[in-house]
Length: 263
Image (cartoon, rainbow, N blue to C red; front, top):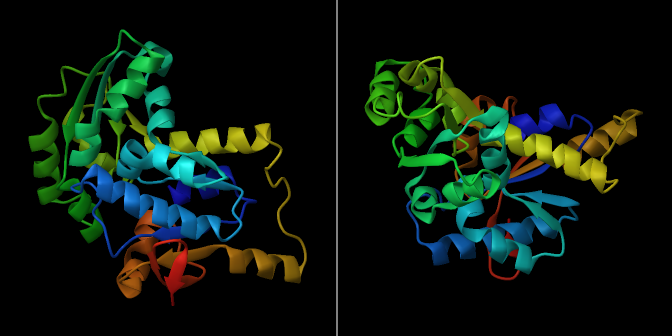
């Protein structure tokens, strides 16, 4: 998601929070995901952000109303943009792969059918894709076998597949191979980045010029800031694979309660 946002909005400055202490969210209850997501959102809002992107599909599926109720800032999740992108070009047989909690919520089915009521939607949990992506096993025999096992029976039943977890685009090659070239893959992160760009422009919030001068560039670098709640060293090692670049500034924090944090 960060990679897509950076590509669509190269002039913007970003603050990123990865809740590495409490992931995975995909196997947790609604109440727990809501609590974690609101705590994370309040932490980010305290940094003066102009827009919050909920880059986790599970948090978007389960906690978006609670996050919006807790903040004064505009909030955009990944479910709606991914669903809208899936039914473009008259595509109507849509598969969704996501975490267990996202699939159980039915959020993608609801969002897709809101845009195209006649669409057929098949949702499937693919939990092993997350550790494969984190281990960097995106193109080996294990990844290929896992993708084939999860997806082989979808090949003839869908014309579009939504990658409904931010980890899954790393496995795009083996997923496409398992489904065949006739199935179009939708990256919910890319779809969200496109809608964020449009929303910022609509609200006259977009930064239209890159930073100029040494001081302004330094300030921008300082604000392109990454926070994690645990395992900062491990995050730094795998960040380039997920984010497209090394974190410019990485800091470990604890986040809980009403905007309290401990460094």
